[in-house]
Length: 353
Image: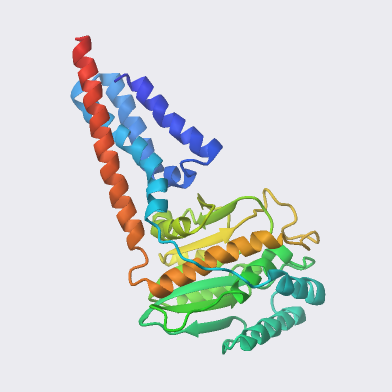
């Protein structure tokens, strides 16, 4: 096959990921070192005309093209379907935090008021929150491995923080936590996020046996729902991002749009992703006096996804299994299609000769 055509196909897949969102650009970025090596090998192959190298290189390139394309739909097909609902009204919590309390800088009087409000809501729901600066509720599971769902409640000075991050707090306050879950569940309301992730960094340094971390931050404004992995150790969080992607209706696996309390866990090589709808680049209300409103429907939509994640880890003995199976199936499909396509190309070459 003409290598220019094959490389054009590969470039087309990458461009469509960037422009159309399919396949998710996250997949491309996850294996970008492999892509670079492949392109480099093509350059060597074309330059030195090594035909015995070109054939296997064609097969590898075709395999990657198919894998990048089929992994998403296979994951969606394999993901379990839960009947869950997020029935809480998030505007009740955001209105109180934004209108009654206002800005909530780290270690301020208003931060203490926000902490007291969160604790009271949790107690009304039957929980027993613990902690000093961070507010933690824990439900012991059959296994000690812990799923952490977190959101920060502090703000920068001069910002009322409706989107950043009363929206994330309202999602956590609206979750139903199943009794006797398979895995231990922990909800954490962090402070100190806006001054360098102080509290979450300390927490990550002093916990182990974490099966996953879901950080909910700035989910009240914005069209796209990002499942954000950190650039560093990005492969560590691949399977967790795929769990969330499979369970969500419209999540987009991505790299780096959110720098929040999941980062310290990622740095410890724990599986951790952030859920977000807005970034500083796209939404200038962040960290400003303009951050006073949320789209209630966006928060409810996010809450439904987080609720499904909680249910999944509560009732599944092996919550990552469907992702492992989907990856294996995608690899098998890709091998078969790449092999079939390669045979067709070989026959075309023979016919030309």
